[in-house]
Amino acid sequence: MKAYKTEIRLSPRQVDKLARTIGVCRFLYNAFISHNQDLYEKEATFCGGMDFDKHVNHVLSVEHPWIKEVSSKARKKAIMNADNAFKRFFKGQSKFPRFKKKKDQDVKAYFPKNNKTDLVVERHRIKVPTLGWVSLKEKGYIPAGSEVSSCTVEQKAGRFYISILVKSDATEPKPNLSSEGIGIDVGLKSFAVTSDGKVFKNINKSRRIKNLEKKLKREQRSLSRKYDYYQKIKKMKKKENPGETENQWKNLNQNIRRLQKLHVRLANMRDAYQDYVIRESVKTKPSFITLESLNVKGMMKNRHLSKAVADQKFYQFKIKLKSKCLKLGIELREVGHFYPSSKLCSSCGEQKISLSLSERVFHCSSCGHTMDRDENAAINLKNAKEYTILT
Ligand SMILES: [Zn+2]
Figure 1 (cartoon, rainbow, N blue to C red):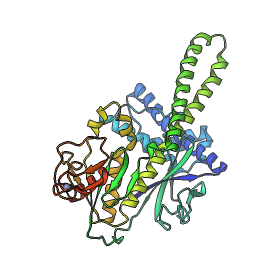
Figure 2: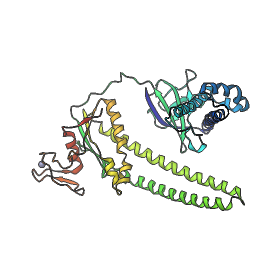
Figure 3: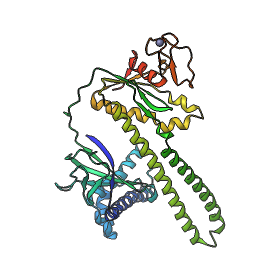
Figure 4: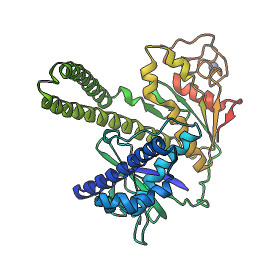
């Protein structure tokens, strides 16, 4: 099975339907918790998910008929999620289940396949039970004609995402790889430089990202100012004017929403860029790819670098690259960070005693070889003889 998660576009009517489904799921999840809290206090017993589902069908849905607007399978899934949360608690694996709040947005709507035409995938859209045809933002990402048995839809910072499981074709042909391998040197100046001379710039230095970061800082500052101010006002005015704070909290929530949106946008841009770097790197179908194991922890200790390092998401890059390599049959090698990849001459093998970070061009005093520092390092990585295989 292969998992896909991708953004979808919903019409206002679909948004409304989804909100109802999510609302009912949240209600049932919370009802399960409070029902069991009561039971425990009164009789010290526990009502399992299956029994609670019957209780919902026979009692709760009579009191609240809107529960029945949502498919019975979706309702059951929400209850069983709560049941699982309790099971983990009983096993000591997690804390007592918490009520889901509207603002947390961590309730997902589950849509099982009910009939043959449900969950049909086309290049640009997918048919979700209850919601109908839904357009996919990234066309062709989910292979058309995929066999899907269920999906979940979630909302995050005003955007909607669908997750599905697809039966993956194990016999998918692997491409013929060339005999050459490549080395990739990742860093802060450029995000990545490959031994075959490709340079991928650090997008965190781009104007677009910098502007978004500035916006983000502004929103954060205004949020914390508002928050402090409202806290003060709340204490002073609560007795005199209870209505006023209500409005101000709404204002605060809008600010939080804007902040969430910015965070998601930045993360999406960084994600998309990494995908692009990986696609371009494997274009020549190398037989292996060598990376240097980065001492990220050590780099994070440097106060001046830690944000820059965190923004590059090197670890995520490695995970993504690994999954791509596994898919294409490329061997992914990792060289320990004590290997002097930047100090070696890629032409004659002479090792420099010292090399300062400011020297952007590598110059070999022994053979006169001159090359970009990062490209030289990438070639040394490619030629490394000692490595661990990650794939
Ligand atoms: Zn040399």
